[in-house]
Image (cartoon, rainbow, N blue to C red):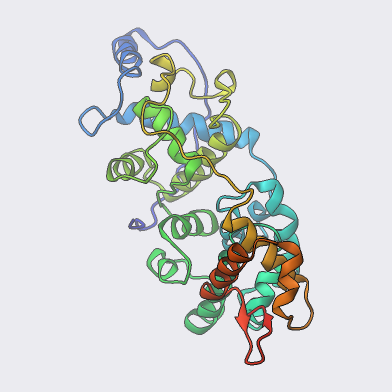
Length: 336
């Protein structure tokens, strides 16, 4: 996903709803009629896309949440930490962990100087703890390759451990104001409904989605970065998965899904997340024992938190394989 060279910033126009002049009435009617047609490469209407991005950005200017990683003084490292933590994790759970993390490790070099196990310990119960190891590895790479500063180039970001397509685009956009298509679950849902007329996007990101996102993306860096943040916020607060608040949406008059009568998802059943009794829960229980321990522990220390021996052994093996636990020569266990 290339980042375009910087261009002159274009300020977001003020949204004013007025009746179109007679000379524009036919064009407006055509756009209105086209709003009920799912967008394809052949039917893409740049004027509608511009109005979607402008309305969303105007809404965001009023309704954006005051989050610490959005503060002007936060800096690229704060943005990077937040992006790692927010993957599959709601903001409310991230905030306290993020704040303690940044207080302890305000720059990449501070984290890189610690053992990886300390990152896992500080990660607490956010879930998916391999993200902590990857963030530690990324901090180490930033120190070794970039003098301790988070790089502002997409390809350099993409080359860091644990930084995928989405995360590199998000850091480039949110931390440096670069033009990049940022496609998280919320943005994909907004695009699917507003342009494609479907309730949910495909389970996996498709080439068609990438192409649509690039076509919708404003050309100016500043506007593109604003759209990325605004569309993500719109999906998180209004265009939600379970109970979309269409009456509060700035795109209600432009949304193809709404114009088509909000057809229900007709693709494969959406995968639900189960947790109770799973190997993932067992791993979490065992990892909590390791996090709470100040010295290496015997294997027997895991038994009280998970009584099913076979599953406990499988969970421990998984922690060892993922580098989240280390078995010492004397048979005891500790964080890496």
